[in-house]
Amino acid sequence: GSNSESKRGALIVLEGLDRSGKTSQSSKLLTYLEGLGHSAELWRFPDRSTNVGQMISMYLSNKSQLDDHTIHLLFSANRWEKRSLMETKLKTGTTLIVDRYSYSGVAFSSAKGLALEWCKAPEIGLLAPDLVLYLDIQPEKAAERGGYGGERYEQLEFQKKVAKCYQVLHDASWKIIDACRPIEDIEKQLQEIVLDCVMTCQKGKPLSNLWS
Ligand code: TMP
Image (cartoon, rainbow, N blue to C red; front, side, top):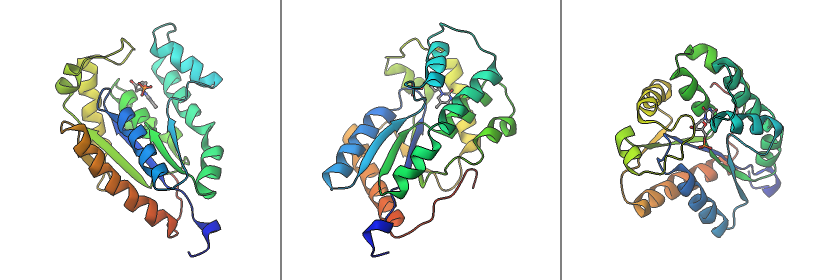
């Protein structure tokens, strides 16, 4: 509406394999939106700053071992503990650029062999993104970029499985971005899509919950 107090922020999620460029494109998007005078924040999951996040971080760096179901639920809990703050930010007009979300949760756990529906269940009721940007890259290409930091999932064979699981998960609403093009081209493409989404949300598109 025309009342500026009613303008809400957009929930924008970036997904993709490790080394697909999500993190650098997320921060470029933040700079872009702030440059236009929008209120925006960069979030990422896992959020390693919380107690749950520290358990996740220990697991990812192979300092602890956890059952596959247990770590799946911790990743989900890590999103639930941020849900109310997320809703408040969005309702008070801040756009959130989120580096990984529930789709990572489902793709990575189902790549280990957990049932898809079981993986989705704990995500039900989290806020649904207004936009999912999937940075599409072949696992082999991502591996060539180097910089796999040695964390638990950063191995080519596993990333291939994750890529297949993302394919099962994605729907027509996702924007699939060819992540092998020059960084500046990707940046431009993302800016257009994101600005369009921010405007749509400002015009009053209602917030909804996963999975919808
Ligand atoms: P990061 O490298 O983006 O911090 O993510 C850490 C790893 O955790 C990455 O390999 C993807 C994985 N992951 C899950 O397995 N489940 C989740 O819910 C999330 C958010 C990430």
